Length: 158
Length: 158
DNA sequence: TAAGATTGATAAATCAATCTTA
DNA sequence: TAAGATTGATTTATCAATCTTA
Image 1 (cartoon, chains in turn yellow, cyan, purple, green):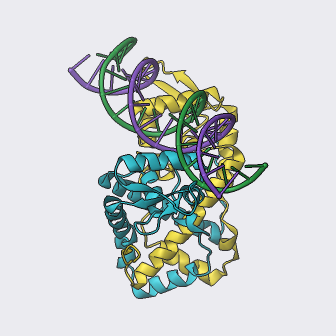
Image 2 (cartoon, chains in turn yellow, cyan, blue, green):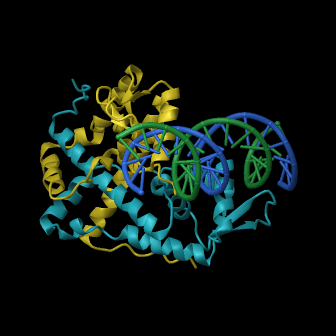
């Protein structure tokens, strides 16, 4: 008398979809574990991804990149600033805007994070050339995330 | 004078990894948009995934499945109960445990959610048979997420 | 007025006690 | 005592005002 589970499409595409999904979940779990090791949250990662040490970025622009509203951005930057990861800078051209840059520490943290994220996982390195090429050829026909929010993980809980 | 971005490995595996990553991000964005349409959060999804209408599940077990502690589970179930999605039931065998089931509404919501998640996206349906088979063959050599937490999305913000 | 940003209040997630029953 | 669950306090995330300058 189990709840009827909606049957996923039993098609070739459906099978491939479930495989992709399973691999995706594994990736997510690994990223989570890695962040914990580094003492970072998903929110921190989301923040670091769109910040830079040499290009001050206005709050308004950050909110857009993070797909949140201005107040959310303010709180986020407040916390990052307290931890010494970022710095606010007044803009001389328009005294309304405050732009944010990574500090030395923030830049270093981001660098370490990216190094680990960019590293292809073992099982991909273990695939033979033919499999990798087949995989790459098929993936090339699929779209990827548009916009900069591509590198933003959700914290979006509501 | 841009911050040096760590160079992702320029290898075949590295390329494939970036492609996979881009496709994952797109998937995530789509799921987020879909949830908003349904008035659900990532947390709601995480909750629904491990609950069932006919198999009462103790709080302790829920906490394990959600990879959180017992108190987190309590708060979560409190909120779901207020919204009429779940119900707590005392267990006669051990009066310490309270087990949770989906209500009619909760089961319906989960059904709708799963229907949409299981649906392979257009671009996969559009791939020709050869590409799908190649993709499937390569993916079969990759691991997937272990355990039930496989279906848990992060809310893990700390 | 409108754009940029902050503040205050509410909801949610997390951690450290506390309470209840086996 | 230990397992199961809840409560209280703190940190984050979100929404609705508010403040400042163009």
